[in-house]
Length: 427
Image 1 (cartoon, helix red, strand yellow):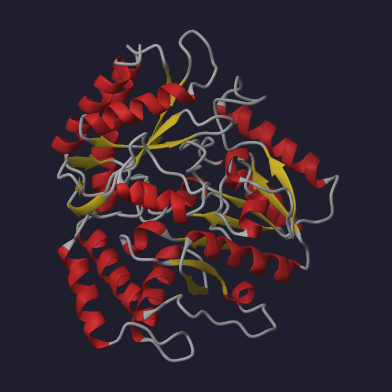
Image 2 (spheres, rainbow, N blue to C red):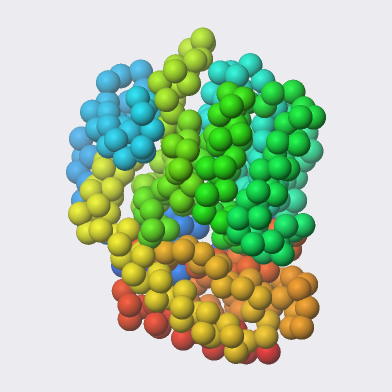
């Protein structure tokens, strides 16, 4: 056990999870690579849990942060803040939500917490619809609506949560249906559920479930849900903490795969927008955002140094068409991994879109999750110079691949080759 690991265990919570049997200390990074304290170099396919969205040590972002730090780092929302206004203007325009207002937080958890506060206040209801296998953060209210037992340590909650089918396409009671029939069955389930409960405030849903293992419904499911919700005045909150900013390649926001009935009433964002700086937030229609009738500020949300990072990062992302790169390089990577999976019995499915890819592992010849295999692949890939993530529903058996959006074709091939060796090693 390293000295740092021993110190970690002595002063930090037991439930603060660490990857790897021999935990890794990352000391610096550049581009799509990071180095550990022993000087080992790794290709990073997880980006600090999808947070290092563009690149490690991106010069445009580090320059903006340094220059802003030399002027002023923080004042709070009690004073006018030019970088915050400028980034809010940019995000409101990109969101697709009409008459949008933006509130900045420090994390995705806090963003979802704020969205729940707005929805329950606006609708005067504490009932919330959420998806099975979902994850929305670690605050008391966010844990209360998380539909993933592995990340929900208490059943206590200020909210009444009802879980809806549809977030996982290839498991559950409707898995055998075609896409259209799957959507119809999920809509029928939603309508039936609404007939048995008080009117809910909102449905909150990740367009692609992150911690759940990068699972998703057929395109159009949330549009069909939206039709049912709209008729009853129920709000739709799109949790874009992991799917936003072009990561899926096909769309800038995950909700756009379900856009037939218009944009969501609210969307939440975080992670990649700051490229490692702590930025989260909520975008909502003005009437929803302005419904609070008590004072509310944010001490650290929207602070100048994080807003400078966000402005520089989003400018780089748009100017270099990183959404297009996610579509092109991610498409090649998915096809390469599917070719590998066809030859490895323990791989149940390769799924995802853009640079948001899940590889689900099972015990060969069964449909039973294999978390031990997922851990073994994670370790083998690390030993060969590749960092991955993990996730999954009933059991953590999905590998999560989400590299920075500047990933090159050569780096995608390198990562795929390492992962192939790791997967073949578990047979």
